[in-house]
Length: 545
Image 1 (tube, helix red, strand yellow):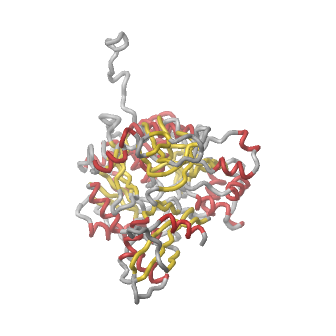
Image 2 (cartoon, one colour):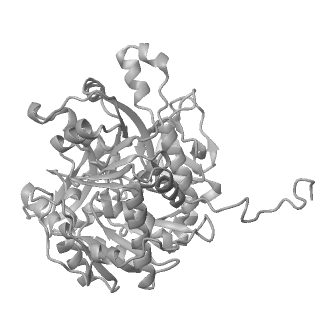
């Protein structure tokens, strides 16, 4: 034992578990009257935000919810989603956010796998959730949320009440002075997010209090979030807990501006009227902004930081965003890394480069977040780093405190993901001489469309259920609006016929609409001598469409 270990142990005075919950507590005490949430005409101060989170925690505790229980939410970007990010873990429970674009079967799988005890549902999504509950084996307490700011032009019509309780009534009965609980250990689970895989059912990614807290500090740094920043919710909060921004904003006592639906006019109105300083989103959000009709656009004096973590935007889009008053920051990460874990740290001298060279620099995924301890490109077989030559392909790997705990109830997948002490992303890339990484391909054939992950195998499984389909392959096709869209190559059985519309409609009966192919090409599907479909050939064909 060294002299620095003698009588210098951990105790309650010098060691507390890291958790993002304390950020909101501090904000409410220091700036109680500062506006924390803007939702339509509703304004919520930090004091009220904190009290509502406590009321939710109290109500959950009264209903027997505690450590390790799963509370599932099917909510749009609204105040209850923010409240759930605090109220649920305040009783040591785990928050599970459902993707609002999922179909009933996918929802039912997640409810069962997560062993959901409480389910909070926005009435906009009550129809699909009711269908899912009919398929599910769990019987959670269902709570309806009836949004007072809901408008009839929302993506889905408001459905019937399906719950035993109403959200506002639930909170009204809760205690605003509830004695909430710190996690027993910062390694305890705080949230559960499901990620699309290449086979069958998705995997449940588990986050810890520690990782979430550290991610908040990293977001504050890399998104350059000053005190009282104003954040517009264009990124769905169900996406990796909104990249941890529901917790991050409290660090700088920022304001959340809620948005149920990403449309040009409400975005411009929020930016101009609320003084928005930051937002995140996929390329489709940028396209929506710069391609908006003139009548929907608004002038604003501030420069708005736009964080995007999908495919690198084309130079024309970046120029258009700059002209419109946005500074684009290119990030990269996965659900397994709490959202973005790398940032394309832009260097001033690169501004002087000619257009082609500048675009090449901007296409890179960059360097590690401050909260990530390791980022590299390796040969996954030898676990040796590839040469930093910008050419040698390898697998992008992560190591650090903002890597997930693992996959829920899936030790095999967890062990495979963490083989040899690194998280294997499944993404193929190169390392440049200056230490910046760049993605080149996705080894798992995931298609990223509008920021959503689409498993090509899931789409292919749907196609194979059509009686006329003999073989098929699905790949991503570049799309200016969505980033990528699925294109299906279909070989029909002898003597059978089918139309493109028929194939697409068939898929819509089996999987979510956004996963369905936008284009169907009929003909012989290229295969190897063993009958394996050659995806690389299909990708080449898709590039020429």
